[in-house]
Image 1: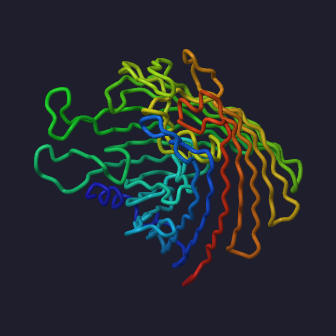
Image 2: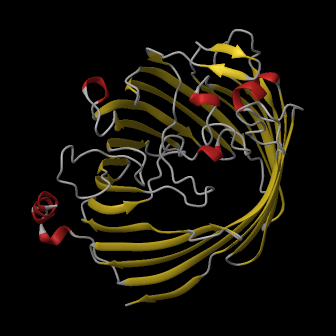
Amino acid sequence: MRRLVLLLMLVPAGCWAQNDTLFSADIQLMTRGEIRNGGMNAKTADETPTEDRSAFILDRERLTLDYRRNWLAARASVQHVGTWGHEGTAGTSIYEAWAKLTARNGLFAQVGRLALRYDDERIVGSDDWVMAAMTHDALRLGYEGHSHKVHAILAYNQNMRAINTPGSYYTNGSRPYKTMQTVWYHYDVPKVPLGASVLLMNIGMQAGEQDGMDDNAPRTEWQLVYGGYVKYAPPHFTLEGSYYRQAGHDENAAKLEAWMAAIKAEWTPDDYWSVKAGYDFLSGDDYVTLLKPGGLGLPRHEVNKGFNPVYGSHHKFYGAMDFFYLSTYVNGFTPGLRNAYIGGTYRPLKNLSFKATYHYLAIGTKLEGLNLTLGHEIELEAAYVPFKDVRLSAGFSYMTGTETMEKLKRASGDGSLRWAWLSLIVSPRLFSAKW
């Protein structure tokens, strides 16, 4: 922190941005009811079938306070997340809490709990569909000027101020990694609707046991995620592409050699229609042993080829039913994913829209004795904004799963997976003042 203060003191006093003082208070009330028939864990450990359906209502209440004056901005946001009828204390936490200093020349420094969103949010995003969403305790330094943006993010997580040996051991914390360093650079081509980004992320994951010895002693395993994203958006058309690689070691000290690529095109001829199509490929492990029907036995891998899109908004990309990357395969096995999709949106009114999307889903690598195809998913969604700050939406998804889906995800054996949801979001601004 002393270094941060010294860095900011070196910026000339006259270069801080000037603007009016602004204070605002916003709330968000989100309620979502879900009905699922044919989900995961359809069998117990001893292969006994169970009733594979559920119905529940989730809620999130979030209060956000924003303050901006001259070169200073600050935010504090607290949220409560729960399930209707849940016994005991539901989750109340600080969602965001940060301060940001911005200079007139484009330099800035931000520290605290941050919601990070980069590019299309495939690798780093808030994943706001998940009720708790995702934030990071971090320091972010950067520059934002004409056509150029560069951010550097530094994070280090700990459970408590421990001074005993090993005092740096990190487990079961609120953030998924022990340490993280990220550099992101974005360039917008002048007078051309083309932008490109480069991302380099170094992640340190806690491995070993706190009281372990020799090979099982506490240590940090490092993995590197690097790649780029490009977006070309002339009138009525958008083309996006991304490519990332993963190297280093996972928490089990297995070597990482994984990659992913994605492309998406969307055409919007007018204010009423849009059509999209795309393809995602995420590499996967290709070495698995089937021990018995319905079960998997996994040998220790010396090389892990399964790509992990780490801290992205997974619900946005790989099917609305969230079978992939928001939930794991049996025993944590990662055979990768192929996701080919096509869909469209119809907007008969400014405040009313209908969406339909089809996904062909398959594993990313060939496995002995299993077909590549996981299933076919159809998604329907409708959204209506009856008043300002009020949004009502509903969706229905249907998936025909295969034997591969049943064995790798323990999904329903009849091949029919259904999920429906109804959501209400009320997000008014309670108060704002400017002076």
